[in-house]
Length: 79
View 1 (cartoon, rainbow, N blue to C red):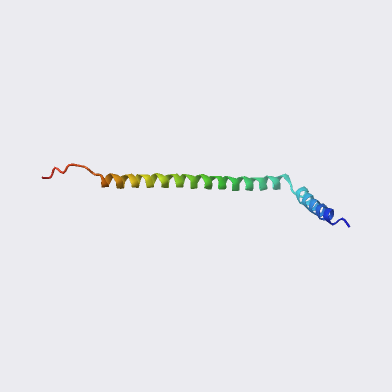
View 2: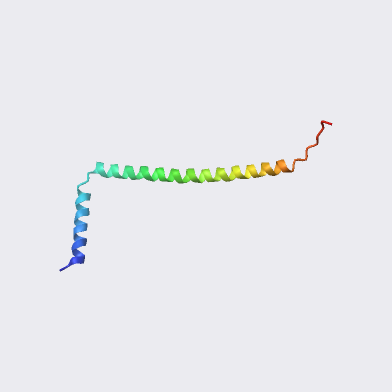
């Protein structure tokens, strides 16, 4: 008869049953795991950002070195 509200009621009662069955230690462990995963994700993001920055710097240095070698105007005093 009330198919749309029945599924909502069952979902709500199942969620409440799971949450009420947890102790404070379980909740702390879950949040600890989530916090650790978030920390790892943030570290990966900033490491990738630093790697991209270092790669751009290396490419710029190599490009400058090639340009410097092509326009080398040192005087040859070996004569």
